[in-house]
Amino acid sequence: MENELVEKESWLKRNWKWSIPTTILIISIFGFFLTSNSPEGISDIVQAYNDNLLYEKAIERANSDKRIVQSIGIIQPIDKLALLEGNAVYSNNNNSVSLSFRIKGTKGNGKLDISADKIGTVWKYKQIILRNKDSKEEIFVLKEF
Image (tube, rainbow, N blue to C red):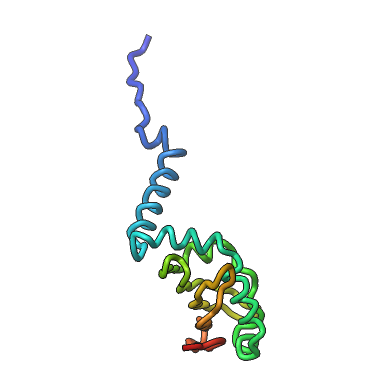
């Protein structure tokens, strides 16, 4: 009988399948909380995420503007991740909002900035601006002050 040393694998080598994804997830969540603009930032994004009419009607209105169609094409329906990556600030007892999120058009990409007030259950848009990513131009769809 021979006397052999049995080499034990390291902890990371044995547990990498769950430890690495868990570490990445924790770092991502921590980074998300650090980059939020305000303590209310997360709740504002969640509220915008749940209010489909707010951004759907703004996109519909932007798609009716000839300058936008020429610049980036028809704006595609946004995915929910676009809102989570964006910025939302509610004020006036959640009856006013400033929202910014990325959009994809048939010809290019950009950001849509919305400023609106809620009257009853309907959003009245004060400002809708498209910022074209490629040409760095701003197109004012609606500017009301």
